[in-house]
Image 1: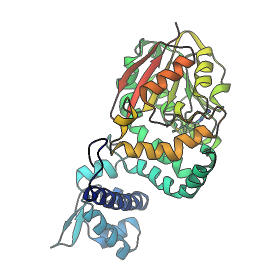
Image 2 (image 1 turned 120 degrees about the horizontal axis):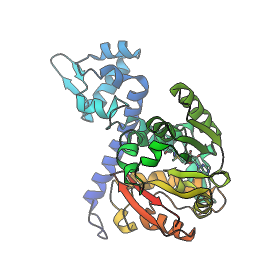
Image 3 (image 1 turned 90 degrees about the vertical axis):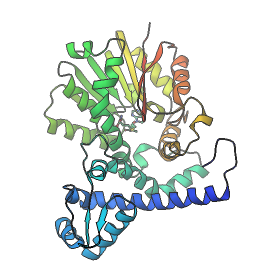
Image 4 (image 1 turned 180 degrees about the vertical axis):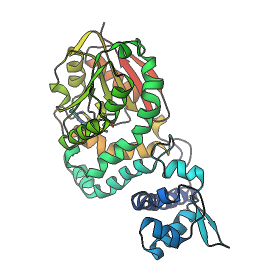
Amino acid sequence: MSEHNEAPSLKDVLHGVADAFAGASTVACIIAGHRTGFYRAMAHGNPMTSSELASAAATNERMTREWLDQQAAAQLVIYDEPSDSYALPSTSAAVLADPDSPFWLAGGLVGIHALYLDLDKGIEVMKGDGALGWVDEDASRVEGTQAPVRLAYDHQLGQQWFPQRAQGVEDLETGIRVADMGCGTGYSTLTLARAFPNSTFIGFDLHQPSIEEARRNASEAGLSNVSFEVAAADAISGPFDLICFFDCLHDMGDPVGIASHAISQLSQGGSIVLVEPFAMQTRTENHYPRASLRYAMSLFCCVPCSLAQPGARGMGSQAGEAGMRAVFAEAGLDDFTRIAESPNHIVYEARPA
Ligand SMILES: C[S@@+](CC[C@H](N)C(=O)[O-])C[C@H]1O[C@@H](n2cnc3c(N)ncnc32)[C@H](O)[C@@H]1O
């Protein structure tokens, strides 16, 4: 597409929209490959015929062949005409087949599926008050929003982001009390509980099904330093030495009131860590093609979630550092520092005097 503020050419618009058509249809096929187990069955990288894949995944051969040709057209699998076979290269496997890979994206695409499942509801709320609570959205929204952040929690949270706090991770290693607000299904809480066994972690979320899943995950993990409670973020009782908001404060209706409440529940010397989706400093800077994904998620998920709650601030995920800094300034806390960032996230620390 064109530079900012210039009208794109007709050719650019046609190509851009045609690429979006192709991309959106490939997303459907990737989700199908994830859910049928095609990628897992091809992860070894050896060539397979459509019959071999159909028998490995227990699917219909003719449908499997059409899926394979779509994936070959999308340049995700390699077709060998003489043997009429297809192979998943290791690069595609890293992105599509292996949930433990730092490059895995297939799980996150489930969130795009949820956008389409909820599209009618999304359009209805656009014509109304904009409110659509987390609990009213399709269940695959939970999987789709939480799968992509898992990579960050696995590979960056304890290793790269937390060491940038003013206190580093020394207090966590010694043993402190930590609240994980809006914890969803508890992946971040469990990751931290595993990494810092001397500290105690409580995950809070107002979405009961997510907390039930978090409890199941905790019991499977066999961790004794973690628990979960259904609670709205402005109803938790401390004191806590550290309060975390991972990818959720912007979803809340009254982030200022919730930040104030969190500040009031900190022990002496305690601090708040926020992980927020990456955003540029200004809206104009945010207007580039990759950010269109973040705005789409924000439009159909973050903004309506916030508008459904008391306060209805509707920050959206793209308010960036200025938006979050303003929330904490309004809550009476100016010691607000950007401590880390990655292509998908910005991490902040807020510390009362
Ligand atoms: C995008 S999800 C993030 C979940 C989790 N922190 C993560 O990073 O995977 C946002 C979460 O915030 C929760 N949430 C939204 N508003 C809330 C509120 N006022 N109090 C507590 N939780 C809230 C939602 O239920 C949802 O689980």
